[in-house]
Length: 537
Image (cartoon, rainbow, N blue to C red; front, side, top):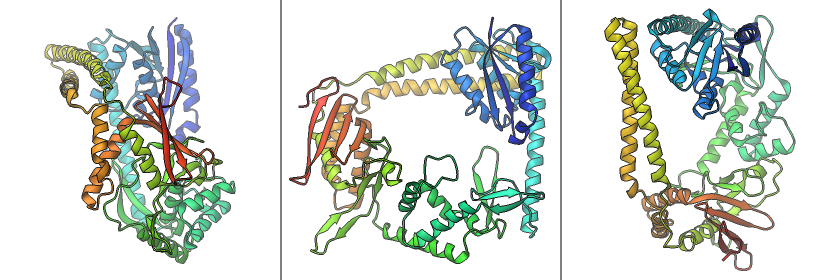
């Protein structure tokens, strides 16, 4: 009995609310039962377009393809769908190549419509023509639909620009909802109140981190499914013109980013913040930004993207306040690292504000001067990985070339335009595979020149003196290089506190450095041991 995976898709959430899911599921289950297949999984892509191909990379279908490539179905599997256009509505050449790759991996593609089955070695000329023709019809239908939708949106934009008031789309900011027929926007009272509070506290001088933390401490639910309030979301609310009722129109071409048109529709949404409060909040944000800019070209945090809280696992956030002068005239550095979990009020007990300058020196010194034995052998793992990759790419190139040669033979023998299109696409695939193979071979040739761990260590040692250089350019370049080297050397960097207070640095997944704060001397001390050994040095 063959294993069968049922795949269902629709391109809009509205369609999914109707009978589409039930119809597809019932038809596929009945078809599998009649064929004697064992259903092992049912995959659903809800509201994902097959015209743009998103489902084949990021959706359930993309995960299925990845499972096939990872060897989850060693005995083969049947992928069953209602119609071929459930799998793709892209260009015919792309559809055919995608199906060829899938069937080469041992998948049988089956459709309820026409009781068709496509498998390895079963693509005769009739099957090729059938797939290409169906793909062409589906693609043309989707293209026309896309053009109709684009035209409809253009008409709506013109109506709004002319002053007409109506709900353009039921998508609304998180503090509004759409009700009634004809639809209208109304504020959600408790959420609108939170938005106003964010603006009022900004005017009062509080920063986004403070606001997010106190919302979390008070247990105020977020507007979505996030695990608490984040400073980044507070900033998005403050920057959103919808709070004062404005809609800023944009266009988005297929496969491209949204681009603002510059057209603004005033009073499109009900305002939840008055214009004066909005103006004062933006001015307060600009003033806070002004205080912390103008310091020149800087790269301060060498541990960005690497440092985590050892207590809760959240990232360590850099709070850059720069240098301040005390009453006695001395200057102190007030840049800190703080646990994001504590800062956002998410229950972490690590409330330590780690003085950045102190801990940068405390972490760099043992890494540079003690962490590496000079006789450590250079790892050959990267070379081995490249050799494996080259073997895989050589096989991929041979498969692509074989397919292209077969397609060329069919095109010559039949003279059909569809076969010529398929050959052109397969030849392009062959060229891509060949380029990837050449690139991997080139990387293997230069791998001997890639810096080893010892070379990384030497680089850190040489650049250490330039980290605080008076020349801005020298300082920036040194810190950039040191940051790169640290990320290559350090596999884990965890800050613990408040008791005991310290940092653990895992170097090259081989050695562990334990750094402790020395309250008596105001600095740090450290110990180190191999990860497979127990006693520190």
